[in-house]
Image (cartoon, rainbow over all chains, first blue to last red; front, side, top):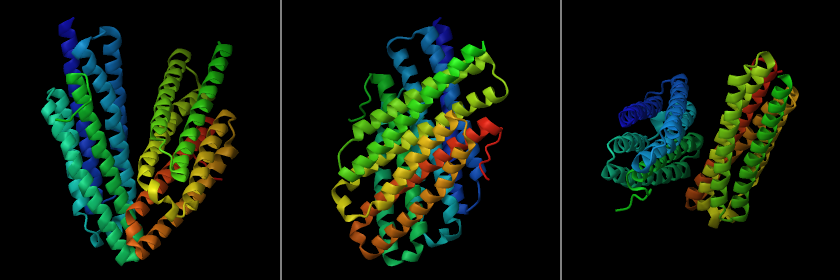
Length: 215
Length: 215
């Protein structure tokens, strides 16, 4: 019985790593759209569909484990945490498509803007997702705490991005519409980082029984 | 057998109307936050949870119907459409919380801004959701087409809201941060309207077998 359960948990971990990989790909794809100006909207939607499918499949797996194996204590927290964190991963997938859709509008004017902060945000947010899942698979609370700390960096970059946008529009209103599109992309990235923190909180829950990540 | 199926469909309709009502309430709640400056974030999150629960419950109902009744032709399209549109309704619930979270930041400065377009957008988006569900329940393609047409109004209001924000920041950069928050609320409302159009397209699919809503 335990052997079967452990095998199921290994498969659950593998599926989560795979779903996390898809989410990373989705973020990278949208950044490619922004940097290279390529129209990869269809690929973005394909990523979203695959992430949604992964969520459904992992959800079934978790529900099956809960109903048929009736796990207790740590095992129960582990499966419940997996069930909750996939909702956050799915929302990240949604937000990647939101970014892809907005990025189409800035395609022709992207040379005019300084996208350093946006790319840094994307890079951090993407790492946070990977690390949060890694923390779950390895049951490592320290890695989960690191993810929570990284969120401050993303928030700071978001504020800088907002301030730069305000300065830019204040000086040159002709670029206003695209500048607003860029700040929306920044907002979506800030939300992606928030979802990564939620995942990290579920990691804490699976280990300690509380979502608290403070030191 | 048919009697049982019809009874199930009636219950499905009732659940969808209820879920639509929840979505409307969620939008109204966020507008109350913006207009009155009340902190209703907990209520917003409660709405989101109830919408998520409604989605899960309707999904189970649809899957049960598909698996155990194996409907064909119009019945199959009807149940499949319900299964798809609840994803859009759930996303609207997410976006209502997104709005609620942003609206906290503008609380103290809302008197400074002209929120007419935001409120008009919210009013239109909310109506579009109600009408799209109404179109589904009554299998009325004309109402579904009306929803699609209303989206142009919301898009136009969004563009005006963006332009006003650009003007405002251009003149007074001190208000920039809150002005960007307001344009983000407008963006979320524009997305809510898009999801209402998606629901209307699923209505078209349930009636004609195609998502096309053009005249």
